[in-house]
Amino acid sequence: MSLNLGYLLSTGIFLSLLAILVLWQITADRLRPALYWATIIASTTAGTTLADFATRSLGVGYLGGVLILATCVVGSLVAWHRKLGKISASDIHAPATERFYWLTITLSQTLGTALGDWTADTGGLGYLGAAAGFAGLLAIVAGLYFQTRINRVGLVWTAFVLTRPLGAAVGDWLDKPLIQGGLALSRPAASAVLALAIIILILVLPQNPEPQERV
Image 1 (cartoon, helix red, strand yellow):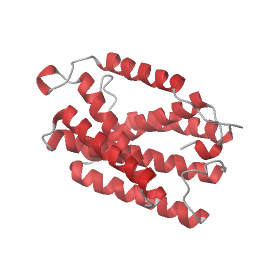
Image 2 (tube, rainbow, N blue to C red):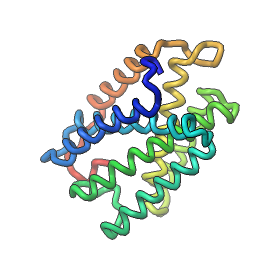
Image 3 (tube, rainbow, N blue to C red):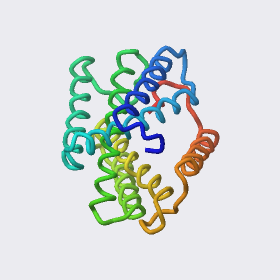
Image 4 (spheres, one colour):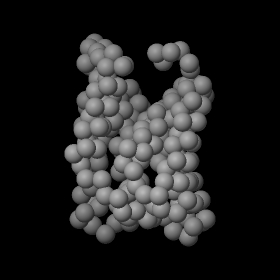
C-alpha cells in the first residue's frame, strides 16, 4: 500500500522470499531461532498480501475469501495426511514434512488475516475488540489443549490460525487513524514496534533446539 505495488506483485515478492527462507530452513542442520522466526514472518507477510488479493482484488469479499482459504487449509492437511500417513505438529524434521508444515502455516496465516479483517471491519468490534475476542478464543484453545484430550493436531492448527487475526488486529490498531480507533502510528513505526517486540520475545523466551519442540 505504501509503495503502490498492488496485492498481486507484493504477494509474488513475499512468496519468493518465503520460498528462499523455507529452502534454507529445510536444509538447516538444526533449529536456528533467527531463521525459523524470519521464515514465520515471511509467511505472515505473504499470507497477508495473499489474503488481501483474495478478498479484495478477486472481488469475493471477506466471507468468500475466508471460505476459500479455510478450504485450502483443510486441503493441505488432508494432502499431508494422505502423503505421509499422519499429521504431527511435534515431529517436524523430515524435508517432506517440513514442506507440508510451511505450506499449511502460510495458508493458515492467509486464512487468519482474512478472518481478522472480516471481524474488525464488519463485526463492529473495532480493532481492540477484535484483538480481545481472538485472544479470548486463543486462551480457550490453550485451555482445551492442556485440560482435555481433544485431538492435538486440530487444536494446534486452530491456535495457529487464531494468532494471525490477533496480530492483524493489533497491527491495525497501531497504524490506523485515531478517528478509526487506532493509534495513528505510521506503517514504518508500527512495523518497528512489532519487530522490536518479536526480537525481545525471541531473546527472552527459551528456544528449544529439539525437533519435537519446533511448533
